[in-house]
Structure formats: C-alpha cells, structure tokens
Length: 148
Image 1: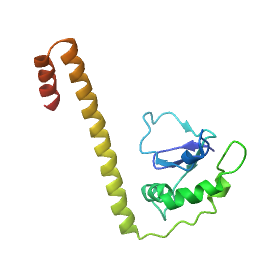
Image 2: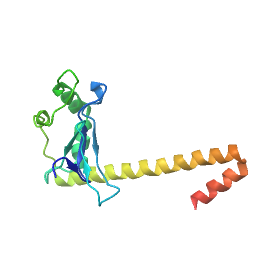
Image 3: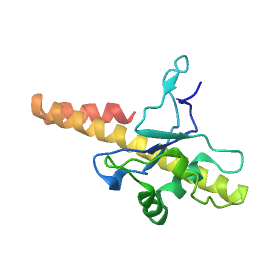
C-alpha cells in the first residue's frame, strides 16, 4: 500500500514551522500493533532502505550536519517544504556491510539506553510524588521495589 510504513523505514520531516527542523530523520523501530497499517502523512517522507544500506546507517547519514545543510538547500516553496524527488539528488555513500552492522549495533544500544533512562526517570518522578504525598520512607520503599 502506497504511503504505508513499517519497522525499519526511515522517516524524514518534510514540513515544519521552521526550516531548521526539515530533513530531521528518525528510524521506525517498532510498530505497537502489527495488525494495523500505519500511513505516512504529507509532513513526512518515508524511505525504505535498500539491501545496500541499513536504515540505521541512513539515519545517521541523513542527520549528519553537512547532509542536513544540503537538505535545507533543497527546501523550497512559500511554506518551506521538502519533496521526495529532491532527496533523490543526494549522494549516498557505499559503506562496507561489516561497518554498517557495527553502526546498527551501536544505534540499537543507544535506543535501548534511552528507553532504560526514560523508565528510570518515570520511576524517579513517581518516587518524588510519593515522598510529597505520603512520606520519604514510602518513597524509598517504592524505589527499592522498583529495583527488584
């Protein structure tokens, strides 16, 4: 289905309230409900990486400052918009598969660390709420239970 996205696709911001955000790329790592399709809106460009370049590598490449600057030069129109046909003009380097694999491993470690950090922050916020609403010993018990 045209416009549908799936895990592994790269999503690039094609329109934003400021041109500096246009071209920012992110990787679709998972879709919460595999039974439902996800459609891409006009403000995003979906790129399905080929067998020659991994999505993680393409994401790093697209977010590199020099490439972001190139992408910003492709933005046109009164409403500042990036078009998929313009992105085809960008050169994409050929990178050895072993190097791409190493990059992908590091990206996924980074994603996992971010997820863990978000969970720890949520736990800490809840502990502060408990300390305020109840007392400090209750908050410390909550933290101890959360670690186990």
